[in-house]
Length: 553
Image (cartoon, rainbow, N blue to C red; front, top):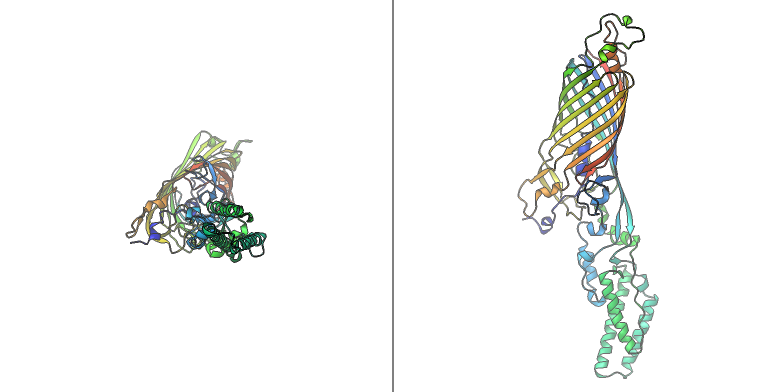
């Protein structure tokens, strides 16, 4: 049987588990072209992803599904009420004086240190992809890619002074006007009792009033001197305290005496929070700035096969290069009409693991973004290029990825307290689901080498599924998958300088020599325009790619 604490832990609330998916899907081939037999392509692909928002689902802030919401939406609310474990010791200590101060014992729902909330969260992934691809035949290539990845998360806080408790008890310490006036009133009541003017029931009531008031004032003064928690004026406990002291004041007034006014603090301060929350050791459980330095991610190995190529390998035009008509583009006739270039590919993403390749990253920091998910993926892809004459080119790819089930340790926390500890984990069998990714890049070609166009990409991932390895009663393993499904659309612009494509046109002329240094360079910028799922990043993607060939045989 699990402990009562474990039975109370129904869900993993972790932003980072869905941030993993775009990490290993960002590397993409530029087009359907393959290196020719004996050629090796070296590829360098730097990519930057950053986001401060996600696409909402069932938002607690009333944001419509699919609209943008801050990343902190899954962590909003006063941190002291969302930490784990709850401040039972502090609540118990406060309630020890509930009778003397005249309030009902405070419950966990009534207890708040104040609103030290998230003001901003920013996630960023920087990756340097290095790849090689070798042409075994003119229509078959193999290769590998190694992504070196750096991730960081910046977490900001803002303090909201609304609270039910405070440590600001200076007004009730010894020597403060309230304490001095209250003691003076108690001394006057004592003199009245000792003077003999009160008898019978009136005397008994006066003695009880003096004892209760003295206990109230002394208890409040003792808590203030110790820096202990005191209910604020706006809290339920504070309202009850004020009413109790007002009753005492009315009884004093009936005897011709006067008690001072009780003015409880209206608000907490950030110093209160730092003293009574962070100093209790709870700070280590808060999401905080995190950074995973540049490290090797999940290596990919792949095979690609060209099926159709009506763009790069075409029948040469008879005659030497110099016979081309004056003022005409080399191979202009073959640049007319609609031409296709089609390739297919298969890829394996290897389950390399290191200290960052885990689903929960740093187990002491729920804002840590890992650099991969540490499991095996198999991906099938179709690459399609379509040339419309010499002016328009569409490059597109569609990829279907199968993320193989595996086992991993997961951290659990209640849905309203995403600050679990390292020991609150369970071994689970996970299936992260199959993903679909589509990229379409229509472009206008200014010449054989230079093109500019728009870019659109689509990504879809279903909700993952989980099973416990071993029996754990009272928990639904699939609550871990809450808001795990993702759908995202991004739109942007791109520029491509492709001397290799220009060289293929010149080679149409019999006797022409290939272009030397036939490299390719492209840059792109895409912005997420819509999405759904709840934790789908509303990301910006900045990317570049440099590819150049080397003859090896």
